Amino acid sequence: MLLCHNRIKPFIHRTPILSSKILNELIGADLYFKCENFQKMGAYKIRGATNAIMLLSDAERKKGVVTHSSGNFAQALSLAGKSHGVQAHIVMPSNAPLVKREAVAYYGGNIVLCEPTMEARISTAKKIVEDKAAVFIHPSNDLNVITGQGTAAMELLEDHPDLNVMVAPIGGGGLIAGSAMAIHHFAYSCDLIGGEPFEVDDAYRSFHSGKIESNITSNTIADGLKTVLGDQTFPIIQKFVKDIIRVTENEIIEAMHLVWERLKIVVEPSSAVAFAAVIKEKEFFKNKKVGIIISGGNVDLKKLPF
Amino acid sequence: MLLCHNRIKPFIHRTPILSSKILNELIGADLYFKCENFQKMGAYKIRGATNAIMLLSDAERKKGVVTHSSGNFAQALSLAGKSHGVQAHIVMPSNAPLVKREAVAYYGGNIVLCEPTMEARISTAKKIVEDKAAVFIHPSNDLNVITGQGTAAMELLEDHPDLNVMVAPIGGGGLIAGSAMAIHHFAYSCDLIGGEPFEVDDAYRSFHSGKIESNITSNTIADGLKTVLGDQTFPIIQKFVKDIIRVTENEIIEAMHLVWERLKIVVEPSSAVAFAAVIKEKEFFKNKKVGIIISGGNVDLKKLPF
Picture 1 (cartoon, each protein chain N blue to C red):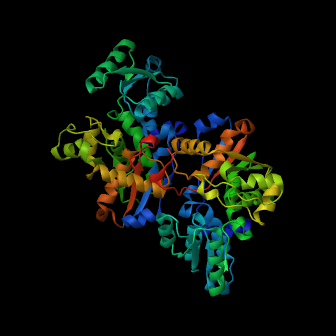
Picture 2 (cartoon, chains in turn red, cyan):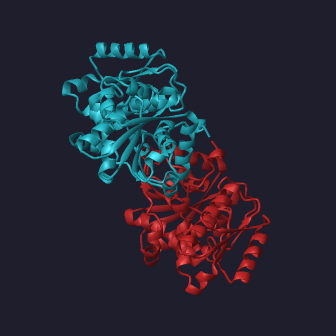
Picture 3 (tube, rainbow over the protein chains, first blue to last red):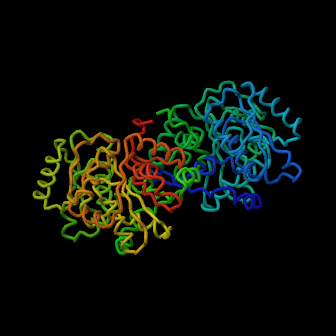
């Protein structure tokens, strides 16, 4: 983790940690928000993408990388590729918003459109891997990516080693699995809690059933959390996460509004899920030092839920 | 200024300075945004209010203070008063939004409502001064307030002593007059430029006519900038401000959108005026190191212009 952090440090921001007296009073706890919305390209994803790209061999770099994502990882891999002279091929569903396609193009990613199904995404990515001998990098289910994502929690713990509990949102599980590794590697006695929307509660159900579950519904505003756990992220989560708290869409929107209003920062809905979990179970968090990972700030300002 | 900064330091935040590669590329300059939206109560106004309160005599403290404001200074004086055991009486127009009245009450200010005219504000404040022997503190036209407001620019210059130019919005002129004092006192060779909405361009016209002008229109989204210059602020502005750039309502909204989108911070419309001026006259700012004061972040999230 320390090696990884030293490796990627020149290519990422050390993001600020914010607090608010009013939010502390609301929960009755000391809250420390790690603001990855201020990260390069607007989300923590650049950490893992950078680590994965930097660990490629020279031969692999020449062949390029592939991922499928319509979200922040698409931009992250494009930018990390650009910074290291590696062509990133990004498989995106044909219905991906124009603003997201433009962002990927801005960072130099080569967009390959496919039908908007998970099967089409996977087969299209596979074809590029075969045609170009490019390296596939999964947005979350990849140990190099997971380790990179964990450096956000690592920085938070460096600045606040006495945290009692840390909370992160769960989508594919890369962020929380990386956070688990950061806590474990540095032997901090800090509990790790996940936040997840009821609408895409695959991680909650997987956590309790002991096997990877899929999502039955996906109608959530937290569009970064629609993906499911994988065989790399799930075992780490099973072993190190203490609990997963589910929140409703209204709770996400209210938490997002509070963060904007009180911390004066722009965060995307997925980012508000961890704080929504803290509000929901505030008795548990009372009188504790709580680290909350704000995962990103890429949101369409013309389509706000409030 | 240094004495003032040492005096108020324990009661204010040293706010962060943010930059964005994309915004730098847009202007072709190095932009440093001094983020007073992260200041206590959400705006730079707490600096001047704290300085004014701390310079009261013991006898004056017991009598309390009075101001008339429906904006950030109302909250600032209430909070500064609360921190120093001084009762603040805040004259507010009867049509002031509930959210602003609640904020003043939250910080312990005693709200006195009056008719929504400037005459009623002044006479109501005068009556409290007479009845309670309280000290009147003007939101901008007061040298102790001006000096306090200047500490934001002072901090910006401490961190970036090589700024070529600084830009601040102009309402009553307290912020820019204080910024002028900071530049002058520390003998930095940094130009100072004001940004002002066309709709309330009293400062621009005063600057050019040589006497204090009033506003003919006031239909601006930048509600913090509707006030006019006073006999304390105007001479400082006349002497030290290099130029005032006027911007349209659309230019303000576009600048505000860009700041939210790229810096990921919540800023109020008045705060976006300085950056709007930079965008408008970008040839002038090209290849320069530009400090931009983001004055505050108190905005009704349910009434955004985009």
